[in-house]
Length: 389
Ligand code: BEZ
Image (cartoon, rainbow, N blue to C red):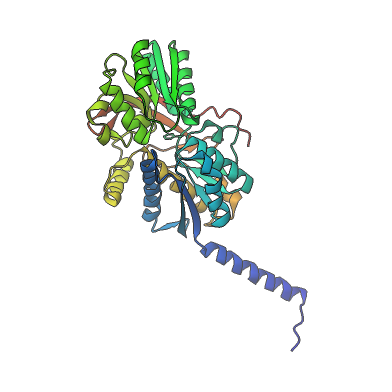
């Protein structure tokens, strides 16, 4: 039998084919590439982010925007030298729809470059590298966490308000540490303070003794430090053991005491930090999140868990706007841009550079909690210098 391809028949065939492939696209699972540290000083941060992300997905019945979620994982070791290879495993080998990562600012910059070049959707669930939502900003790059400038600038203001005049800073010599010190210096010096000396050591070195001796010799009013994870535990303990806590109170962005208090014990008691999350916000939203997280993972939530949870919420908002179609990038991006995220930290929206505009809390350590003492800066937006979408 001979089939005649009339224009009408061709049009029907094309429509049936289009519907078929759309149905396939809509039924295919969303491929999420988690690029996080599973080893090294930031390993625990990576686990908390992953668990936060998965908790939100589990709360939606294992789906986002009505689609199943399939995970692909790479341990990035917080090693910038391996970052390009690692991100390409997810983009080229696994062909993920969305990258979620990472913790370390240097690794995140390589991820952002690869995401930009391949036009892969990227959600950064921690790394604060200012450039990611600054000069590197792009339609396909989002952040659920903070810029390094945000909590640091707030702490500069707080340190000056608390009457300190001369401060020494100390951090790892890499993007996050240096940007954090820069943000602190900006806030502190604008309010009349002076940074006397900026000390650094290579990431992820934890041999602090020689630098602590230098701090003691300088006799500052206070010290500002950026460390996180295992490095933060060791630094706070060494600082207290050196007997400096009274003569030069230790301040920092909340990473210095978040997820670390059990290990820091007595040494961290009474410390003030600034961050976009605290342990006892005591809102119905945060209480429900903390209960669900503790039930699921048998540990208390921290800021990293919140950032992972919110990365999944942001993706869900985009998928909802795109009718569940991850390939409908324009609608997906517009949905994420417009969303108000009902975060455990408090509701927030994204800036035009795709970074959260959020309250920065002043917190004080009491027992195993970073207790909220007030809002240091309300609705703080990163300046996003150099961002042109
Ligand atoms: C960063 O590298 O951006 C970073 C790492 C840990 C905590 C906060 C920021």
